[in-house]
Length: 90
Image (cartoon, rainbow, N blue to C red; front, side, top):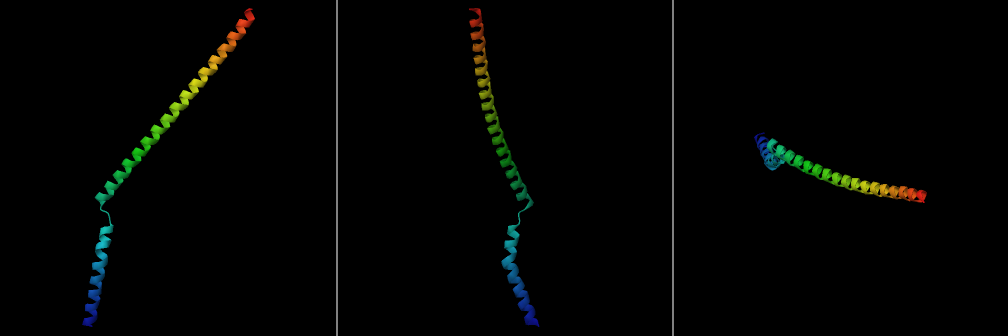
């Protein structure tokens, strides 16, 4: 009986020695969890900033294009009115 108890304790000791440290190292501390969360928040904020910048540029280009198109149409309309009034006066 004593031998069986010694063998069991030795086997338990070996199992804990092999598995124990790896199990303990795999767990993150709360401090490390907070650091990771902070980094992820920082990266998310950067991504949001980039997306906002991209959207603002696209909006600016669309407004510029629309403004130029409106100016062209206004100029074309003015020429039509001028042509009609010039031909009516002659």
